Image 1 (cartoon, helix red, strand yellow):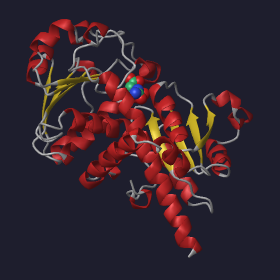
Image 2: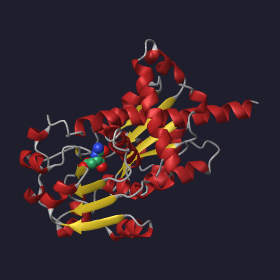
Image 3: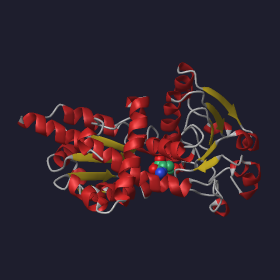
Image 4: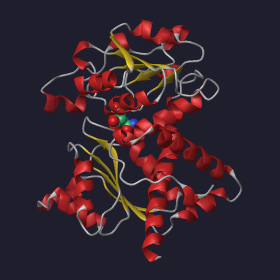
Length: 335
Ligand code: NCD
């Protein structure tokens, strides 16, 4: 594995910045890092790569998988981490502006990984720091209801690996199920679908949680075939990927709605395993509620636990690309 030749990567703000060559490449890098780790001495080699670097994990919204996978990914690359998980412990309580706090962090760390309920914070932080003498790459680890670009990348990686003997992601039918209006995961992944040939999307949701017009317009503009439906069983029969999501009711207060905990007519249960195609897979970004029955966990087509583990591998690739890019820039400046 040649760290000097990792693809160029700066801010990771939105899936809009990715093209097909990058998507293919980041999946290849993820795979190479996994293979290197399994080689004798591989773990040590990885740990030596970026040992003088520090990352800030600024996570002021709840997170288990994304936070832990980013933290462990950094540690496996030798990157030290500092974090803010509760804004009450940072100077935001002294009414420092968010941008000042971010500029403060950027004085001490090389990369900022951010999850925030504030709409567009990662993007605004990136633009703000770019205009200072100490710009720093920002990784959006999920912002408000908008985007979750690294989740979309790990989902692509999971699909590519699951279908490695069936032509990868191209040509697949993906059923997105649940709160399609507010799942930033689904929004980001749906926007990547046009990079793959001959995709078909089945958008399965209760009427109040239909996919938002901006994503439908994006699919139309890029000629991705989709069908909005409430026929969950029909979608399960047809799909290569059944992608389940939870009701995102943390947004209820802001939206002025009161959502049910889940929609029983869209729960994936053991019975659905009987109608799911033998070569299909089931995905879920986590955390799950009743929409995905734990009794389906042991079916070989259930890939959500693997999907979660892939999160760490993929995020390690993302961090490695960002830090290798910084390293190259630093070397160029020295020359
Ligand atoms: C998702 C999120 O935070 O958007 N979780 C995750 O990062 N894996 C999905 C969710 O919370 O439902």
